[in-house]
Length: 637
Image (cartoon, rainbow, N blue to C red; front, side):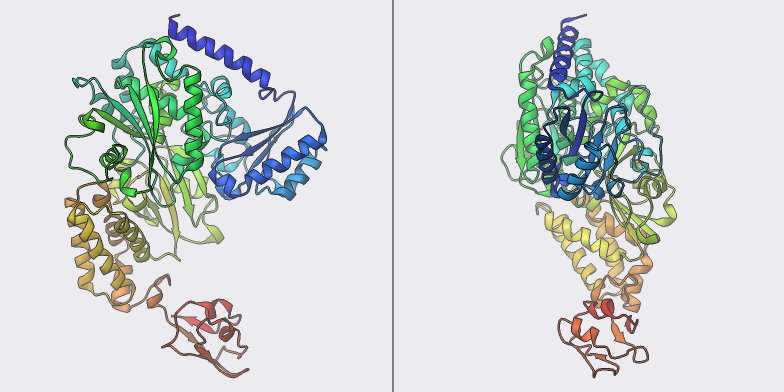
């Protein structure tokens, strides 16, 4: 046993002693009330729930009842989530808990031993079906949540500790989550060639969107004569509807730091940076505290675990510019310059921060790094596909029953995500498309629902993996309107440095606005397509190159909708208000006056018990009349 292995053994021993002394690990002796705490949980009232339980514990005078705070489990649509652990019994999971239900749960279940059925998070399955069991990476998660259908078809690697460990408890991370075991293994072996080869063998690809092989990226720094090197964790998560990175930073910050230290060692970096958007105050706070704890335990700073490796971390805050997710713009921002991309090559691995070799990996990528060395590269690779090892975390949203964070193996069929983990569409609606990849992504139509979700397959169909946004769309969604929404976002977020992105996206948006207003022509559709291809080929950075993707993919799969907008002047989904026409059917109207009362511009007239009429010149097409009519007398044309 070398010095690093001995120091890690000492860390384990010390952590276990601290963990036992805290009483947190004695699930066999104490009753535990576990409350989720992340931005999403807190926004749903988790802090109020925590305080309510804490007051009841104090009032009860019971020393055997403990309360603990964990991160987000990903079941966002059912938060706040509370888990009650009673010795000798299976965990009981409650959802949508508030102060009132907390009082009932404490009185009836915690004190009385009787579950409160009306607040239970319903379960339709009793066994965990995930694949990561051999290395016990997700055993703690399985024991707590594996009974629920939402998690049965998931495989937890990146999110293995989310909702399980207390975010800022290093003792629990070391004792329960094999924390820093991977780092100790890497430092003890002290073989960078072996380390990078393991990363290459794992087939871990960058989870930030581009999907570049992580090991190959690290390999680029080898042989560079520059001694000063940097590694950056890109936590500038800007895609609309994406919150994977934020959740990981808030729920399992130690694993991200362990991953970035391993990455720093792989490229012989002396320093690393967290680049986090300022809109993530809880994530920032927890990363700050985690860095302090790691320094205290000798896991950051000089001579980490006696290995002779010196490495430390700093945090830099982003101001929320979407373009700063692009690595060269991010570098400029850290340097204190305006966040604009630059021409590549040279790539950051050759010339990055302050002109020195720099590796930039996103949060999810770094969360997977320790898992590679705990599981072994071969086992990690087997979870995914031939070219993409491991899992992918998605922010599942839209017209699906189960919204939230889901983690599935690379190569999982889109159908299994939507109808398996997602539980199918709301209200029995029909699936129309799945939007992946955020503003740089595209639409996968329902007839391609059986494709395997992977970097290469999505690109082939005109979409993109992106950081992991996945929005489920049904027949009430207009594809032209969706394309316009994303283009509005990217046009607004364009840094303005290159003409194709700055001016081209503006012209594209103008065409889309004409089409959705009923003023477009078939020639406009052709112009839109040519302009999109031109911008894609000539823009400077990924923002501009990706901006036309939502338009091109909708033109590819839903061209008839564009043609309907310009030829028939109709929006089949009824989203483009300029193309909507409301009329009152005189044969059905009973003259109740409900539509006239609901109209915000008083454009509906008629005597009581007589058919009413809409003044089309004054109608703003808000749909209020259509929504309030109980007799189906208002036609939406």
